[in-house]
Image 1: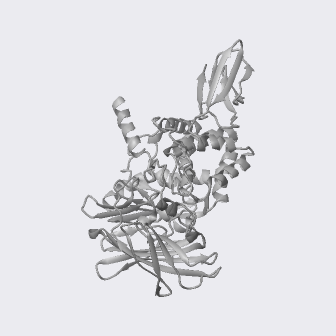
Image 2 (image 1 turned 30 degrees about the vertical axis):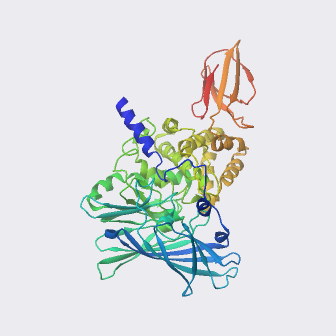
Length: 545
């Protein structure tokens, strides 16, 4: 038991963040951080409408070459456009209407001087030609880039992962989350005998006659840059049609051929996931692009309509239960968590990396909603409360804006427990489900801010949630209920709270459930027993004086 716990803790601290780059505590920011993380003047004047990423990948050389055709709508006149591409990748040239344009390189940001007039409302395009050996992932997906691996038969097994680090680590684009491209064509040429799987639907597979093939994948829906992926391997495919809320949904599975039979059994969690999450969150947001689960040589990530999987065909997180309750071994963590991001990350996307909790808090919470759907509320509560042991309360969940800075890794399980607490305050599970589904309708295929989410939830609950969100998102302290019982009187108050925090909580007095309404001031309540217990579903500390 102790040995297993030590193994679990070591695993937890090394790999808890399951779908983002390493979250580093950074207090000093550079000009490069600002160029990457802010809506610069060279970004704001144009709106992305379409990408055609057309590249060749040479695995033996770990080399990429090709171009990205970027179509955009002019919002206001300007002549300078910012395109992002990270070293050691190199922009060879940029063309508009066949004419080569001047480029001012400033680190990973490249400023293109346009020669033609950019008139409001026009839709124009540029071609960015590039090449190079992209950053190799050291520990994907946390320290991402390209994973150049081999399968057990010695064949190339390749994948991309770049959240946080940025999609510009391997292809040129407008690398800021606020502006998602409306649709996209991904054309990838690779050696014959291997298959590339990317986002959206496969529109054509062409034999080039020179021992290479080109796959063309079309993404019909808006997609964030880091969601775009390339996965190349000795793949085989199997599929099923899921009868979903919006009709027939194609669910495709791409796995290494030696794992086919294993995958057919293990991936039964995928349609179970779809059933539970359509119940809680509403229809899968990308029916037009299908749903795919793709085996990769790293743990996995939430690439839109092309969710990647590397959990070794085990239940839990690599066979471990992050809640230490047993409930975490009832499902494959990567299938459930990463697919949950289709609603929170890919459908509803943060505008600024500081608000990454919108992705991770709701998706960590989706794990226990999956359990709720199949095993009930008590199982769900056991799980999410069990994950509190993983919370560090080291820094606020929300990061620093406009410099591509993520907040604390507590965005996962502190975020989940915040939402679990909020469910108790709503006191109406029908309404709670309406709120979760409503978020995915109100902000369908949009990029959002924390304020938009807060305002929506306050409106739907008819409660001013300002202090609640300030407490859990912007402060590292956990509300502490202090109480004492003497002379047939219960005295109680909150400490370690932000201004105006007065969250009511459910308590049990002599076996009977009732509400109390603590604030920063001492309050009293007649009580004829010392049998007093606070409901475990509220994420607070309790201190008996």
